[in-house]
Amino acid sequence: MDARHSDACRTIDMKKLKHYVVILVMMGCCVVSRADIAMTTTGNLGYVLHIQMTPAICEIDDNAKRQRKCLEGYAMTVASLVPEVMRSDCFTNTSANLSQVQSKVVARLIPDEAYRVQLWRTIGGCMPMNASQYFRTMTTFAQNLKIPTLLTDAASHTVSYSALQDQFMKLNNSLPANAIQFNCQRAGRKALLTHASICYKTNGQFKACPTQITANCPTNFNIQGTY
Image 1 (cartoon, rainbow, N blue to C red):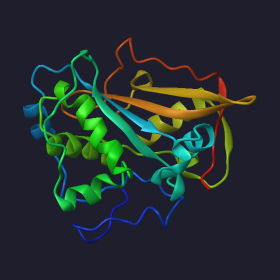
Image 2: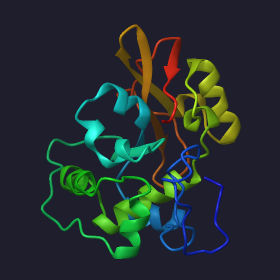
Image 3: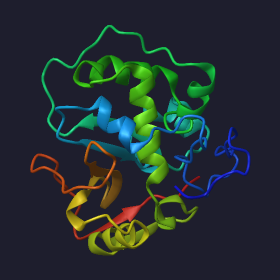
């Protein structure tokens, strides 16, 4: 994201600004350079960032409605950052603890701490980095991704797959069409956009998604407005 606070160690309060994307992050304090990312990902082919459309999840999933992301009206959260080629033994017992400063930054991406800890426990064994490096990498990818305003609007919208794809590509100049995939779930007669998956090289540049990362949204689908 390119919207930043003038203070390099402060963030915008996304809970109060519900029409903005919640993956704005702290500038400078927890940013990883592309060179640093490449150094920590030797042997990995790439990453996939899964972004969750929180209002749609809160509409569909009764369990999610009791979580902070729904109770506080987040427009968007990060579901995970995973290697593009997953192994079956990704569980780790290594520490998921973060510094107080980094925890506050990550809370803008993943507001529920229990989910953050479980995510690291589930995926950490497949990451060539510790938890702090992992969440810094996730933060960097999220920071650099520009989001169409339709996804953070208070109103709901019906959009075509190609139109939303085009908006992402116009906002992110180096994003190829095959680097982003949209996934939907049914809510009655509507198909709601629930996730967007964006594929990256290990240096943070966009790349074509591997064949196992697929989309299931129909030609036209709904974007649930914020609430």
